[in-house]
Every structure is written in C-alpha cells, then in structure tokens.
Amino acid sequence: MKARVLLVVAVVGLAGCDAAEAREPGPDLAVAESSPAQRYRGSGFVIEDATHGPQLCETATASLVPQCQGLDIAGWSWDAVAHTTRGATRFGRFEVTGTYDGSRLTLTEPPGPPRPPADRSSPDFTSPCPAPAGGWRVVDDAKATDAALERARALVASTPDAGGLWVDLRDDTNDPRTLVLNVRTTGDPATHEKRLRRVWGGALCVSPATRTTAELERIQAGVEKSFPGVFQAGIDVVANRVSARIYVATDETRRAADERFGPGAVELVPFLRPV
Image (tube, rainbow, N blue to C red; front, side, top):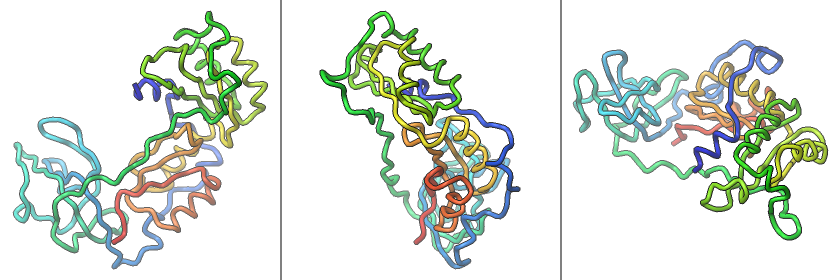
C-alpha cells in the first residue's frame, strides 16, 4: 500500500548544475568538527568479498550471498567473530565502535552483537488541510478515478510552482473515491486548486510549500556532491525537504547544509552515533 503511495508522490531524478551545485565538493564536513579521538558506534552488516575488504553497511541485498558497498573497516578480524562464509564472501551483523576519518572506521573495541535499529519515524501522510464541512468527500464522481488521479499527477509534474504530491489513503480500500490528494505549491493554493479541479473530482488538499520539486531535485544533487559521507538521499515530499543518510552528522555539518541550501532544506540522518 505504501509503495503505491510513494509511486504517486513523485519519481525523483537528479538535475543539472546550477547555483545549488556551484561549490566544488570539499572535505567531508561530517568530520570537520570531530576530534580524531571521537568514537562512533553503529549496527549493521559487515561484509567482505573478492572485490573489497570488510565494509560496514546499514543494509545489504537480500540474497543467499548478501552484497553491499559501505564503509571500510580497519582493524577487523573474522577470526574474532562468529560469521557466515559462502564462497569468497564472509558476512554477519554486528555492532561496531571506532574512530571515523571521513573514509573508514578504525575499530577501538571488539565488535559485539547488533542492536535493534533505532526507531525511525515514518512519513505522516495525513492531509495538512482541515477537513471541509461535512468531511472529505467526492465532488465529481466522473473525475474520482485512477485515470483522473494520473491526470492530476501529470498536471502537478508539469506545473513549475508545484512542490510535489502524495495521497492520504484514509482506509485500506485503495479507492480513489476515499483518498485525499495532497499537493504542495509555492504559488497561490487557491489558483492551484482551481487548476486541479479541471481533472480531479476527489477529495483535495492544496497546501503551501517553501521549495518546488525542481528545487528539491537540485538540492538532492548538491547534497550528494558536497557531502562525501552521504550514502543515500531522497526527497521527502510531505516535509518538503531532502532527507539524506550520512555516516556521521555533526553540528558543523548541519550548519553547512543550512547555509548552503537554506534552513530546514536538508535533514541529515546519521548512521554512526557518537559514543
């Protein structure tokens, strides 16, 4: 169900160079504030195969022989830990602690059993608009269909001031007549709603956005270029920002992101936490 919601939201691509990408990639700002003695801890897969030495990954491919591309680990010994071997691949899940120099983690204590992943809040797809008098309802049955929803998605995608869209399903039926279509815009919400009503007759919420989809795509590309510690980045349409997974996030990193892309435009979510 959520997969369908995310497909409706947007297909996120990378944009070309512009002001958001003007600065050449510099050093990993995630490390700039940290003392060389600062230790970090994280749980994940440690995998070594014929192509690389031990690497720490947050996730790995779900296959008989898991694979990943992650953070190099110095000081690792498979003889010291229980693990699985399949062919040239050795792997297991562990909690690791060490210092981070921007490119690798150097162990400072023996690996331990993995801890459950920290709770990560899921996006709240609830409509930000107050329910209209009488509740959310269809205003035109002929335009409350899957085809109409696709036409509305295409209209939003072609509108320069659009900040993305998502759907609030509200029940388990996946019925376009019961969902609420949510659209963000940096323009006038009333004007945007009037335009959408030409193609969409279901429940509709148009709310303000700070950044357009095009701006978010440029920020996403800029984050991936400017912060080498980022290993995953995507657009959070509901929050109207870019969410980036990064090995280490310091106060300095977050300040740099705010200064470069604007306050609140980027959420940095660290994989490794300071000890």
